[in-house]
Structures are given as structure tokens and as C-alpha cells.
Length: 388
Ligand SMILES: Cc1cc2nc3c(=O)[nH]c(=O)nc-3n(C[C@H](O)[C@H](O)[C@H](O)COP(=O)(O)OP(=O)(O)OC[C@H]3O[C@@H](n4cnc5c(N)ncnc54)[C@H](O)[C@@H]3O)c2cc1C
Image (cartoon, rainbow, N blue to C red; front, side, top):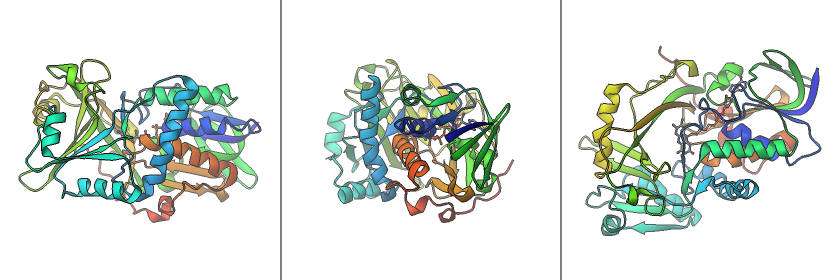
């Protein structure tokens, strides 16, 4: 039976970053096992771009991860000579008193995050791409921007392999069995024994670790792209990544998010919340939007940015694992030999290199200054049964 020090199961967002970090340790035999190819359309990172923010309204527990990720993304760019992070800023727009805007302002104050505040007039002058309402403000997170997830995952894997990490692609892990002296990992064709195992299997995690099934469910997330009549004002020089919140007449908050153009003709712009049902497995995630849904979404995108032509020009459906409180689970099983990070809850890519560093530290030395008590499995609420 093949024997290694550390196996990483799932070489997607977090797994690729953990493998990159483990590659620094030439004294360790490290093996990555990935069901698909080195970069693919199945992982939760697929879809051309991800938003990167350092003013993280989702909670102060993410602040260290955000800070550390800035340097790590830069490090990966320098090592590979590739552009992974577009430093165009992240702009939040909305009324100052609604929860997401107030939370963004609070973390900025608390952690001294580099930013710019814009009043309604400045927003209208500087960002004419948006429909601005009376009383809206803007908060520009200066270190924010867009990430290219496929380029990032590929780059991390490439550096890992250059440093001697062994990769098995096209290989599915079907079982993980912790024993007293190691962990036996079984694939469709062979078994490997490792000292430690890191599980970064994303939305598939509960298929390998059913003990987490009560805490994590799988949710579809759709992406849409629309075309402006004049692309010139929608390039990263003029348009940051954006989060735009507006209060509807019934008091609910509608949220748009998006990126400047990366393809030269369209911008990514999405609407949240969307009407997707929680599914019981990745295999149940819808493969595409319905035509009816795209027809409904088009006019809503124009409400946010009047310079867009209505109908989306591109659309795709992806998925992520969600926990009940949108905080990821980072937990150790099997006497500490199996370390899992899952349930990134639609918010994990921006911090992927910091999670990768955390996982590598936990696998090598049992400790990480990036680990928070809130990540422990017993700090998460149980999920209800999934319908359908
Ligand atoms: C549409 C969309 C938009 C998003 N937008 C943002 C954003 O703007 N900013 C942000 O920060 N986050 C965003 N997220 C969230 C972020 O992309 C995810 O949280 C993150 O990619 C999850 O990473 P992961 O490593 O857990 O999963 P993945 O990247 O999916 O990696 C899991 C890997 O494990 C492999 N695998 C699974 N099971 C097995 C097995 N049995 N054997 C071998 N390999 C296996 C899979 O093939 C996959 O490669 C978004 C997510 C989606 C879907």
C-alpha cells in the first residue's frame, strides 16, 4: 500500500491552496487526489470571477483571514507571473442605516480598513453606471477587487507540483478510514495510507463524511452576465466590484453584486436572494436557468444599472455547501488525523489561500493562529431535513 505523510482530498479552492502551502515542506510526502481535472467546471470556484473584499460584513471572525489573504494572493501572483487579483476596489452602495451597510462601516472602523466614503452626489458623479437613490452612500473597500478563480486554482496546483507534491487527477476517493496509526484512503482503484488527511471536498463533503450531514447542505448559486450599451465605463479602471442593496416597498432588501468586465463585452451582475431550493446532493443541482427565470431577471438587472441591455447574455448555475449560520466548519476527526474544512457558504473563495494555510498548519503542527473557535462543528446549528 502506498504510504505518504499527508493526503489532500479535493483539489478545488481550498485544497489547491493547502497543497501549495504543503509544497513548501520538502521533507513531507504530500499527495493530492481530485476527482476531476486540475481545473474544471464542477467545483464551486467555476464561473470566471469572484468578489474579493477585506471589509467583511459577515463578521469580525473573518478579518484575519481577509488580511492574510491579501498577501497570499499577491505571493501566488509573484510566483507564477499571472494576474489573479484585479485591484479595482469593492464598492458597497445603499442606505447607511440598513444592516449590510452598517455592518460594513462597523468593521471598517473597528479594524482601520483602508476605505473611502462617498455621499449621494459623489456616487452619482463618479459611478454613473448605477441607479442611485436619495440618501444612498457608498463605501469603497480600497483593497477589494475581483479574483480569477480558475487561474488561481491552476496556479496554486502548478506551484505545488513544482515543489514535489504528487497529484492524482481523475480519481475519486470513496472512503476515509482513520486507524490508530494512520488513515486509509480508498479510491476507486487503490488504497493509500497517510499520517494525516485534509478533506476539502466542497459541496461533496457529506458524501465522504456523513457525520457532517446535519450541519451542511448544498445550495445552487446562479451567475448572470449582461451587456452594457457602452462597455467603456464598465472596465476595472472605472468600475469596482460592487454590492448594491436597495430597500423594496415591502421593506425587504434586494441585493445585486457584480464585477467589471473581464471578457471585454459583458459584466457579471447577479441578484440575491434568488429562488433556488436547497438540494440533497450536487447531482441534483439544476444544470441551467430556465428561460422564464432569465426573462424575469433581465429587467431587474437594469433597475440596478440602467445602461445594461435587459436580457442576460450568459448564465450558469453552480453550487456551494452552506452551514446554518454561514460560518464554515473546520473540524478534526479520527483522533485529529482527519481535518475537514467545508460549508464555505458562498463566501469562501476570497479567503481560500488563508484557509489553505490554516489547513496546512493544522496538518503539520496541530495549531493555526487563523483557526477560530466558531469554526468547530459543535458551534453550528443542526440543519433541517432537505425536501426533495
Ligand atoms: C456562483 C458562486 C459565486 C460565488 N461568489 C463568491 C464571491 O464572489 N466571493 C467569495 O469569496 N466566494 C464566492 N463563492 C463561494 C466560493 O466560491 C466557495 O465557497 C468556494 O469555492 C468553496 O471551495 P471548496 O474548496 O469548499 O470547494 P470546491 O472549490 O468545489 O473544491 C472541492 C473539490 O473537491 C473535489 N472532490 C469532491 N469530492 C471528491 C472525492 N470524493 N474525491 C476526490 N475529489 C473530490 C471536487 O471535484 C472539487 O474540485 C461563490 C460560489 C459560487 C458557487
